[in-house]
Image (cartoon, rainbow, N blue to C red; front, top):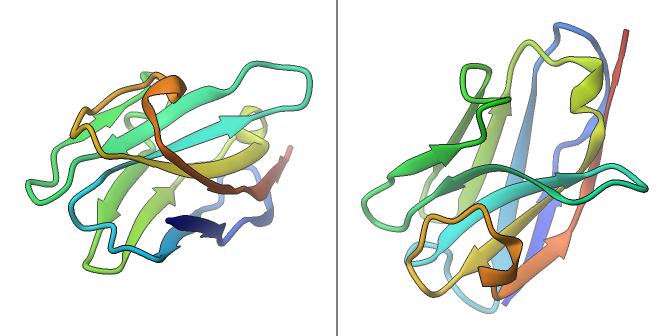
Length: 121
């Protein structure tokens, strides 16, 4: 499975962006898919996760009110509202077959290349 994140860009604080995660080689519908982000020199940070068919969600406390993860048959999305400069990072999507809504990157089997999100103040 190859994942691809898209939708990043440069925005001002307070703006919104919608990221998309798509897959080739396998449908995402049965997998737990999460978004992680990373700033150079810092550890990777969990952002949000969504389960397969049931659509259960799990968020990091820092984004819970502002971000929404969702999915359709083909993609997983991350709607990011009221963006802040501290949200600046490379955002990557990941998927796991264990059906576990987890914030632990080690549990994820598939990773995609990230998309850069830059929020200016």
